[in-house]
Amino acid sequence: MFVYVGNPENAAKTTVPIIEPLEESPDGWVIINTFRDVPYDALTLLENILDPSHVAFTHHRTVGNRANATALGLEVIESGKQGFKGVWQQGIKPNQSGKLSTTFVAPCLMWHDINSERGRIITSVYATPIRKGECRLFARFPFKFSSKLPGLFIQLRPRWYYHIGQNGVLEDDQIFLHYQERYLAAKGGSYNFAKAFYLPTKADSFVFELRQWVNQYNAEPFPGESFPPIVPREKLLERYNSHTLNCASCRTALVNIQRLKLWCGIITVFALISTPVLSLFFHPRSIPVAVAETLTPLIFGVIWLLLNKIQKQFYSGRPIPLRNLPEKN
Image 1 (cartoon, helix red, strand yellow):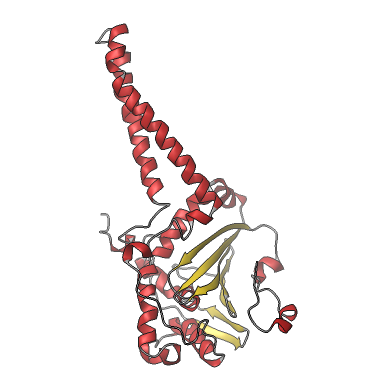
Image 2 (image 1 turned 180 degrees about the vertical axis):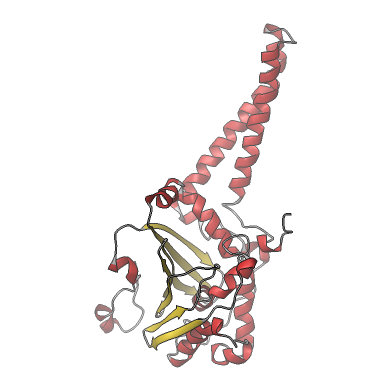
């Protein structure tokens, strides 16, 4: 559902912002959808997503790789009140070819479109303001491949599995974005962005254009309001209320995992306490009995531990991002 917040007389004349490539060629797409409430403004979210050059660094070992870091040449080719369009001179990955472009549809939608011979990948985000310092992200990841096999693999994996991974990607920069927008506000806000941040290269073109658009059209979502107090680190990484509780797929998966954990625990305990009983009916040195007494609690105990690890990921994110962990040799 979309809500028009301007003059009611203009609502009927205003079209709902759409992801144009999906409308132009609707067949053959495999789409992953997700959402989350994030602890920073909608403009901060858009600024972050519009900056592809940060992926190799911030999202190293999730969706990026430092080895692929390069000077991206981004160019704005069209700009106006309704948003802007831009093109990339090269991709994030080495030898990534094809047509690469970015579109911002004011005030809340953007997408990156990577269209090559091997397939087409779109990263799209609707940034919905909730209150000062908080917004709801609706993300869509459409894929179109020349072969049906990759799309089949995507469809076979459960939705909650993707949501856990996508939450992890969001949390790669969730903490410093929360602080970054407060730093910008302290330096004079969007109208002083060029002095608050050093944006000297073509890789900064889309971020620069977004801030210019905000200033030119007075597009701050909550003008004159101050940011709320800084949120504690553990709350910045909180997932249950910001996603799981309102996601049917993740909420159902969590309930099922909790049930499986309960049964694994029961079986493990029963296997351990049944050892003296079994010795009354079978020879103590019976190999099948010894194997059953050893393997049953071990297997179900390990399964319980794995389920417990997955369960935690529905409640909170990693305290240390993968990019900051020691590299494996």
